Image (cartoon, rainbow, N blue to C red):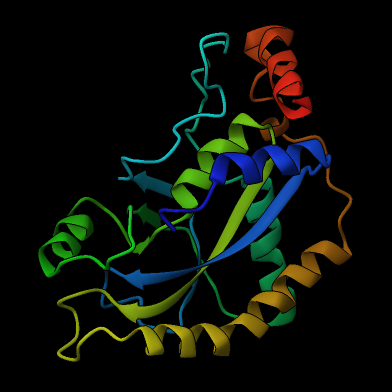
Length: 214
């Protein structure tokens, strides 16, 4: 996760005309009430990464953009994910805070304890960076977090990456059903996420277009 070129990926999707992104993430739970196997649609984010791109707008000629990330995951996409889960009879948790760490290591037991006290519900390594950059690109973005393992210190058993892979493989077909339901009825309306640069006029958008065409 720490080696992904998030900026290049987001700019490539912008160049292709992508308007919305649905993603899934493997996460460790920070709470006993969210056991492995839980599907959660987060509505909030705590980004603790420190060595990744913070913005699409890099370089001396880039405009300064202070993006609004009050609701980091697109509310409209989230609403559709929840509705699709209900339609398909798949249980998901509506809302929660995704904590994004740098990786690639898992958290310590103390980190899990502190993150839970801060209000975190699940911990992953990708969605924090993606949420910020997709919002800057005016692309709607929402995720389903698959809880694949207990956070450190919440289980007497040692953490196992094979456990993460096994739970993810078991739950991905359910996630795919929800995504397919959303896509099947996709008549995506105008969304505030698609206007996140509006307060900066055409300057920021023009700079992004130029960056994509390089």
